[in-house]
Amino acid sequence: MKKILIVDDQPEVRELVEVTLRVGDFKILQAENGPKALKIARAEKPELILLDVMMPEGGMDGLEVCEQLKKDPETAGITIIMLTAKGQEIDKERGNQVGADDYFTKPFSPLKLINKVEEVLG
Image (cartoon, rainbow, N blue to C red):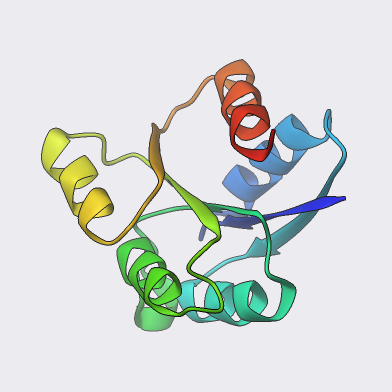
């Protein structure tokens, strides 16, 4: 069973994404801030992380989390999709600079998210 880590400071967003992904055979993990996301990612080694950019709690945003995971040889291979309300081109460029594999803008289509996850996890 493939593992997916959902990282978002809003519990309702984490729940919506989890419910959306229940159609697949995935183990869903959740984190509400950057430090917890790093801890879970390093311990569990999920195949995919859906990572919010703006997370005021924990003092670390999603871009910092992505950058740390991509620089660490233990976690560099994890696919990271930024899931964010910040959808301007400059935001996508910043995501690419820190190693994000893809970018999904909120609000998102559940069907498109499922398709993207299935495409990534094959």
